Length: 371
Image (tube, rainbow, N blue to C red; front, side):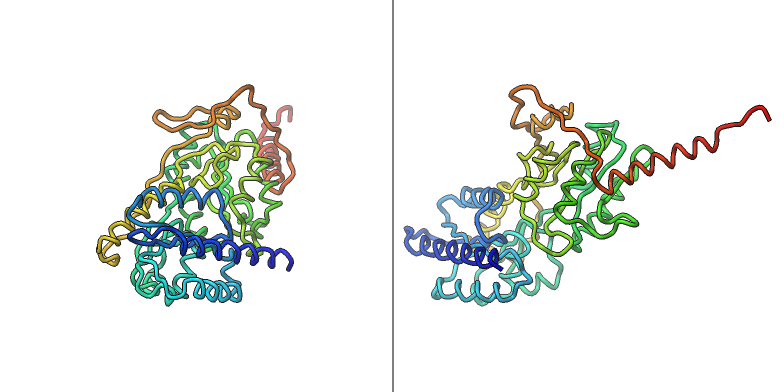
C-alpha cells in the first residue's frame, strides 16, 4: 500500500511538472502530447521521446505525461483523468501519441480529453478492430516481434545450439508469439529443443521474477535464450524493463537474444531489434502528416523495421561474432569472464531428467552376449 501511494505521488508530481512546463514554454506552431504507459521516465520511453522530438524538429513541441502502470486500477486511472483534465484547462493538443498498451487504453477510455486530436499509437502490438474503432481518429506504429528472423539468426550465429529457451508472459499477445516461435523452430527440431518456461506440461504455472532469474541462470552452455515479452508476472503484477535488465545483468548464463532494445546494454547479446528511438522517429513522421492535414484514418499502420544490433562485450563472453553489416556497440575493454551455469530451476531438472531417459534407452537397447 505504501509503494502504491509513493507511485501515485510520483505520478502526480511528474504530471503537474509536465503541464507546468507546457504552459510556460515558448509557444510553437503545434503541440503533440506523448502519453507514456509508465508512472515516470525510463531509459526506454525517453529514447522513444527523443526520436519523436528530433523527428518533429521545429514543427511541433512535445509534452510528455506519465500514467499509472496498472491499467486494472480503475481508481488510479480516474484520478489521472481528473488531474489531467484540470491541468489542461481546455487546452487540446494537435495530436496525441500513446506509448504502449496502457497509454492507448487510457486515451480510448478518456477520449473527451482530446476530442478532436488524431491519435497515434506506438510501442505495442497492432490493436484489434474493436479497439481501433473505439479510438476513432486513429492510426499507429505497431511493434511486431521479428520471431522467425531471430530464430534463424540464433542458429546461423551458433549452429551448435541444442536448446532454445523462449521467454514469454501469460498475456494474450504472448500466446500468438509462442505459436510463431513453434513455427519458426520447425526446420531445427531435428537438432534442437524448444522450451517455454512456465508453459511446459507439468510446469504451466507461468513465472514470477525470481523464477525467471533462476531460469536464466540455469540454461546450459549448449542453449540460447530468446527474450520475447515479459510485461507482467504470473500474478498480473507489471514488470518494468529495469527489472528485466537487472535480472539479465545478474543471472544470464547463456546468450540472450532480444527483439527490442528495452533491456539492451544489460549483458544480452542483442539481435534483430526494434529500437525505441526509431519508433519515436516513425511516430514523428506520422504526426507531421497529420499536422499537415492528412486524414489519419487514411493511413495504414506501418510497423517499425528492426535493426541488427549487438553488444560487443556480450558477444565476446560467449565466443560469438556479429554477422556482416550488423551494428556492434560496447566493445570489450579486457578479458571477459564467463559465468557458471547453476542447476537451480525446474528447467535444469527437466534437462537432467531428459538426459537420464536417453541414457536409460541406450542401456536398454544394448545387445546382450553370452546367452
